Each structure stands twice: as C-alpha cells, then as structure tokens.
Picture 1 (cartoon, helix red, strand yellow):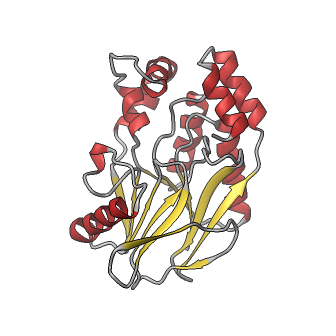
Picture 2 (picture 1 turned 90 degrees about the horizontal axis):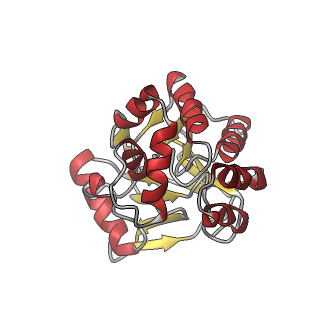
Length: 250
C-alpha cells in the first residue's frame, strides 16, 4: 500500500491541495496527516475542513502542538506561534476544534509508527533534529510500540536517520523523487518535511510516500501557489513575517 505522509500544513490550503493532488497522481492509497494542521497560515478553517474530509475517507490524523494551541490558546503572546493560536481559535467552529482536540498522539500500522514530534514522550513535542534525538525517538518507538520505522514532522526538514555500525544513528539527506529501500529489518526515523511552511530556502511544498509492500520511501517537493497563500496571511492581518516566510521558503 502506498501511504502519503503529510505534516505541518499550517493553515496553507494551497499547499495542501497541491500535495494531495500530487500524491493521488502518484498512486497514494492511504493518507496520513502528521499534525500541525493549523497555526501561522491564513486559512485554518479551510485546511481543517479539507483534512476532515480526508479523515472521513479513511485518512489517519495525529495531533500536533499547534493543533493543541489552537484548541487551548496560551495566555502569553510571546512568539509567532502562540500569537497566531488565538487568531486561529477564533476562526474555527466548535466542530473543527473538537476534531483537533480528539486526534490521537500516535498511530501504529504494522511496524510503522506515525507521530508529530519525537516518539519519546510525544506530548512534550520534542524536536528530532540530531542523531542523538533520533536515537531517543527510535528507542522509545521500539520499547513502547515494537515499531521499526518512525515517521514524523515538526522540524520542517526532510531527513532520514538510520543505525550505523556503532548502533548510533546516522543522518541521510534524501534527494527528491529518488526511492530509498526501507526494509523492516532496518530501523529508521524519518522527518517528512512541511507541506505548508518549508524552511530550507526552497518554497516548494514537502511530503513523502511510503510503500509498505515494496518497502520503499520517496520524498517529494511540490510547486504550489505560494503567493496566494502569502496574500491570505496579509489579508487576515497576521504578522508580515509569516507571509514573507512562504515567499522565501525560510
């Protein structure tokens, strides 16, 4: 089964539609949304509606930290994330907030674990941005879920970590569109990148496709209308930095 892995949409409806269309053309049979549907972007209600429609068709959807903040906005508006949470909260219906609030923290499919942040205490929302943190994530996934593959978002970059000869994790930076063998006997931690807010200097959207039959993984970059997504942020009156980030890809 081909499983499309999408994360960190961040209220970017244009990017979400571009990635789901690309994935369907590539043969996706199952969608997984790895959290952070909302936050930062200008169309939270449109994105939640789109994901709820995917969920009704069988998609698996786990919770992200920005989804949690949108349901329960923090009182202190001391950064872009928390300041957009209150704005997002006000634009979601009770049904949409209930949907975000009731998403699970993890989803297990065979030996594959899907989670927004590290599998090591997922509710702490720890970033997997180093070999050391990837090992903590992998150890927790083995211990708590008997998983060999972990797929997550949160860091907005596409990276694969795997055990080297010393059993410490090693980093691999994938090339878009090139299939990577992912046998179940080999452990791996995969950050799939961000659909709605890339931060590597490339404005194109990110997602990945896992084939659990052929045991391969492909990373993708997808062009979309970033200008329209940036204009939606400006029209909403959100901070200008959120719009220029989409135009610059960082």
